[in-house]
Amino acid sequence: MKWHELAQTHCPIARTLSIFGDRWTLLIIRNAFLRTQRFDDFQQQLGITRHLLAERLNRLVDCHVFEKVLYNQSPKRYEYKLTPKGKALYPIIIAMSDWGNTWQNEDNEFLSINYLHKKCGNITKPSVTCDCCGEELEANQVLPVFQEAE
Image (cartoon, rainbow, N blue to C red; front, side, top):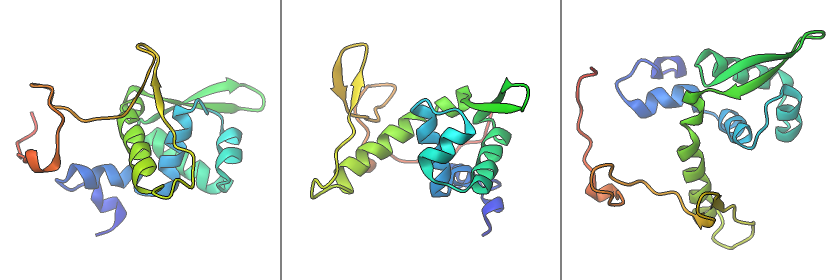
């Protein structure tokens, strides 16, 4: 199956990967959550080629993950701001960070990144819970159920 065909499958994971299925796109999203908005800042922080960065940013704008906002008229310069659709990726980003802290740093070679919940002042770990009963979801306790879109 080709990458562009993933967007047309019934699998929501495959459709998501049609947008975020390469390493650069997720790193761009990560940096956007770290308040990066300008092309040159993304390029400098990531070390990505200008051509590849422009391609990824344009795709994220086309998919409504970023909004391209003019901040300088001459020469024209834009900022890339997360849309509500883009901001909805935050739980995925911090879950991946937590997974990396746990499973890609078993020898404690790297610093861990923790997340401070500003409202309560405590370090928190991401978790997925049932929106009905509040119990944490585990893979062996969940069954996918398919249904028609409304």
